[in-house]
Image (cartoon, rainbow, N blue to C red; front, side, top):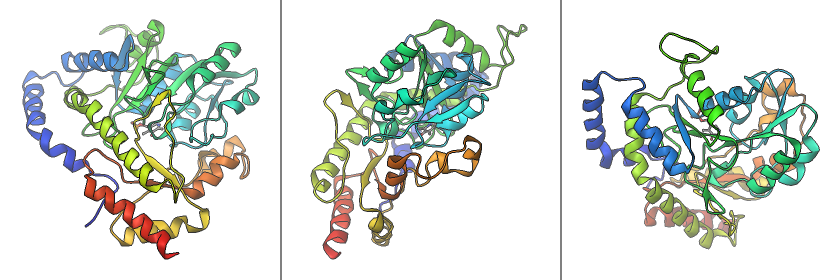
Length: 368
Ligand SMILES: *Cc1c(COP(=O)(O)O)cnc(C)c1O
């Protein structure tokens, strides 16, 4: 049996008929961009994320980038984030012409809140914590540091839709947030998509214009803008899938629990803290660096596909040369990049497939 790392097709099948219905509805309406479908989804997702406002955008990176633009962040400014993340967490900062300042991760893979204050300078304007793997960053500490230093907080919630921190959903924990609707994320559309959320009316009004050419209305333009809107068709797809999200996220957590119960004796598994409800976009284990690649090869030879999130820390990517970091600057991120493995995790994974993943891993350790 083969267990692929992702399984998008299995989620499509049971929803196919509903998708065809909205294709017919939107097709006949002629309203392919903006309009009712987008507004409906924006109301639903704001409601879901417990925020006053939400906007559907072309992708999650744009949600972060336009949020930074709306915060007036640009040349001469600095924004703090974590090098243990997907590249977009940093390029959205670089694209505003602000400088990316990295802070190492902690054991939970999220930004180490004890190291943030050391990275703050007179130029720092914002902190961009990533809720990596679907686990909320330590938002109380981050918000306190931000408040003390007059900084904005932008949550990179791309991997964490539905996750809770001290009973509240991510997306409304800082000044603004960006979510991704990329097909591989916990709420994925049939293409690219993203969501911006905030409780701040000014940020909302500004991103609303920025995503639509900077237009205030049909004919008057207030700002130099961008074109970054979620299509009506994708908005309807997202609305259909949103109804299933809590069930899916429960299954993500259930699978995580099974992995943890069965594997925590032989590998390092993530720990759920009492105050959080992660959504396990990725289930990341750690093993000794010397055996990591052998283990992945062994599992693949048995039909179990695994991945690394992420093998090259952002500060060591070629594009980061201008930031002048070097190997050794972020020891934890660099060490984890050599030790981490992401196991298959998606709601459609059944119990016997989970058993195979677990037994294959155990087999490897029995053999060495
Ligand atoms: C997926 C992802 C993004 C980017 O989302 P897109 O919709 O692909 O633009 C940003 N940050 C993180 C941490 C992500 O995982």
